[in-house]
Image 1: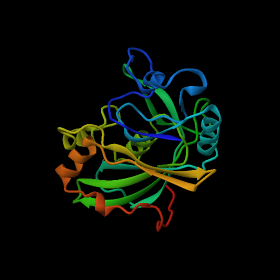
Image 2 (image 1 turned 90 degrees about the vertical axis):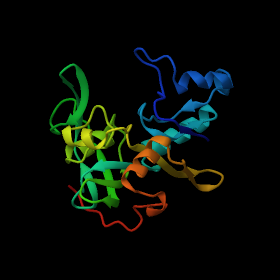
Image 3 (image 1 turned 120 degrees about the vertical axis):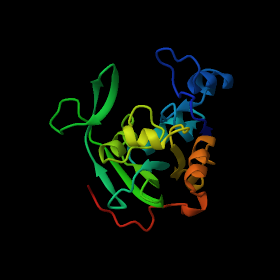
Image 4 (image 1 turned 45 degrees about the vertical axis):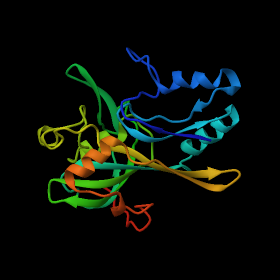
Length: 232
């Protein structure tokens, strides 16, 4: 297993007008079986833990852990407002839709042809009055922009998000980049049992913490351990 602390602003894979990305940088290890393999993705503006398989066999095992939900990913985020309830699970199908000149991921009816089931667990960690909340998010599925779309859908968009924001969150986000960080991953490993990997927070999230008075020490290593699940 190879773990990276991906910086915000660096794409994981190439695309239209994207020539600088992690997949391209992996060529430095060589090609063929020597080249590490991507097993999951992070959005360009999301920082934090990104796992790769050092060999094709390792990549297949890691991919299987994500596909079978054996890997637990925990994200830290700063969102607009104070979610109620303070903990629970968001279950909303998502689909890609053209909105103006952009493509966004939005809630969809389960019967819609392109709708995909999506599930996100959440828990509030700390509040800065009624304005913002420091939260932990855990995706149970891996849809494009899932966390960002789900938080926008329940009325609490992630701050600093240029795509999934509203007027109030834009005002609160002044001077901030996307406040979303892949804090940790825990998954089974054939040699060491459960493997826990944690990424130090990014400069972008540090700026959000400083602006609103949050601290890393407010969060347990597993913020979901004592959670009473409520669905919405």
